[in-house]
Length: 345
Image 1 (tube, rainbow, N blue to C red):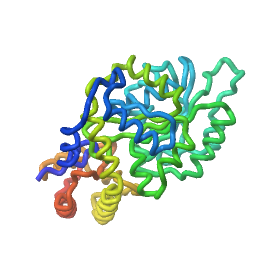
Image 2 (image 1 turned 60 degrees about the vertical axis):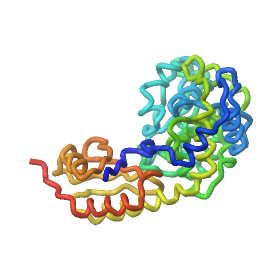
Image 3 (image 1 turned 135 degrees about the vertical axis):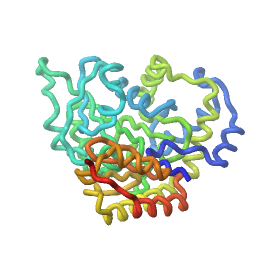
Image 4 (image 1 turned 90 degrees about the vertical axis):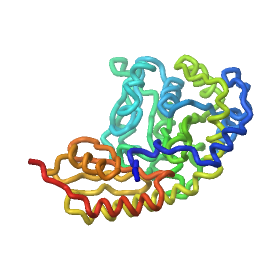
């Protein structure tokens, strides 16, 4: 039995999702003539109470298009030092938009309104970049699936508004936060100018993210998507997977959260584990003891059919997901408890 906990992107479509994909009505989405893509975009826009949505092949492209729609070359965006748009999008902020990042030293990927306020460059001081956009990520990937306090998100909104800054949410795993915090997409749509949400993280789709916002911002992003090469033709087969996931795979995210808690509880009992970071959703980040070699530890897990990610310096990540069954879960816990771990020589 292979147990892949590298990410929640390793899932495969369920039979119900495959059936929906095979029966989808399609057209040419570059001409906005794919009825299923149009239906997905309308569905997501309605969920967030926002004017318009746009389907993208990836979350990175959705974020990058959103950033470009908000900024001009030479501008600066403000984000936490753990932010995905800074750490894991290939330098796209600089490459695609000519924009720099003002990094905030937050907590587990989350910054405060006061920190955002202190990071804004004076608009009349032409020696520094123009602050034009605030980006936050919920849940935070590098922060271990942490969920923001929505009241702090609202306070940042007020800071951004008072300084005429755009406000973008990288909501790749927002669905996890909504389930955990018992919040709604409409609450977030009322706060942000743009929101990107992923369909292939957590929700089990093979491909796809959606950017939502105002008509004007999404019209700008539509042109940017074309420039980035993101125009797709009969994409309705993929959009059908997204519609199915939104209808069937959101509430079940609590199962992933529960399994993550089980794994964390087991890890805390093991002598080779130095510490386990707080667990809120489906991501577990933990450190092994300093005298244990990370590479050898990962190889030992792999020899037992378990795959997780090493983040360097003894820090590791586990992500639960739709394809991680109860049988796999019980087996993984058994493997952890009986794992022969050698100290580094």
